[in-house]
Amino acid sequence: MTRPPRALVLGGSTEGFAVAERLVALGADVVTSFAGRTERRRAPAGHVRVGGFGGPDGLAAYLEAEKIAVAIDATHPFAARMKANAAEACRAAGVPLAHVERPAWAAVAGDDWREAADVSEAAAMIPATPGPCLVTVGRQELMPFTARTDLVLLLRMIDPLAAPFPHPRAEILLDRGPFSLESERALFETRIVGSVVAKNSGGAAAEAKLTVARERGLPVIMVRRPPRPEGLTFATPEAAVGWAAARIGL
Ligand code: NAP
Image (cartoon, rainbow, N blue to C red; front, top):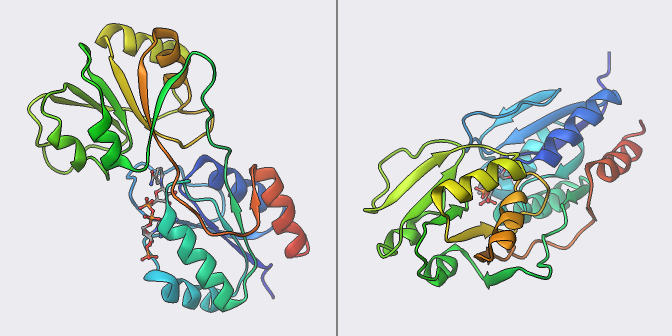
């Protein structure tokens, strides 16, 4: 019996989950790939594999070995290396690739955003405020904040750090989105948050902190998205699924 055409979803985002679920519902054979950074993954329908491929060559070899007919990059907007690897590997293996990328957030009237090129620049830009700085960049890129011993830091992340964070006044908040407006308002109020550092991830799940910062007139240090490879890009999982389904004849 021949199996249906196999789709590879590079996951690690809400969009990746939605793409896999929808493609499976349409009858596709789907494998979702995770980097393995997060311990509590939400596994979508279909197959799941975890861990790096070994660069673009490793991914190209995987595409061929697994007879992947179509690939969808639904990694986080800041997963720049994986996006570039996907573009290179799919080109080499002749596998059609599309990216799913949710639109970036844009400042609106009342926002006090200060744009940073990367997390290091963001850490250096945090202004001195009476209340702590809420840092929401994930746990992989926290080292630049160790230099800011002049600040109290509230470091929010999904999984705990492997070792204590080397900072005299940092507190870890373990939590995972989606974050509601009510819960963010309560956090900012009880902790008297003074500033926020965020990556411009876009999407609804992490947006409430920006609304609350606006309500309270707080500065937000916003890390710009890294450049990504050119190529077919959809703003929604639905659009990417429509494209992929057509490519594999569903
Ligand atoms: P990255 O810097 O672009 O990727 C580093 C390496 O991790 C890649 O070269 C690849 O290793 C491996 N990798 C990344 N995504 C993978 C996937 N979906 N499946 C298999 N291997 C993967 O990305 P990152 O910032 O480490 O992010 C890793 C994952 O976390 C991504 O899936 C991303 O969607 C998710 N995530 C990232 C952020 C963020 O802010 N960066 C936030 C939320 C979620 P090989 O070269 O060995 O193949």
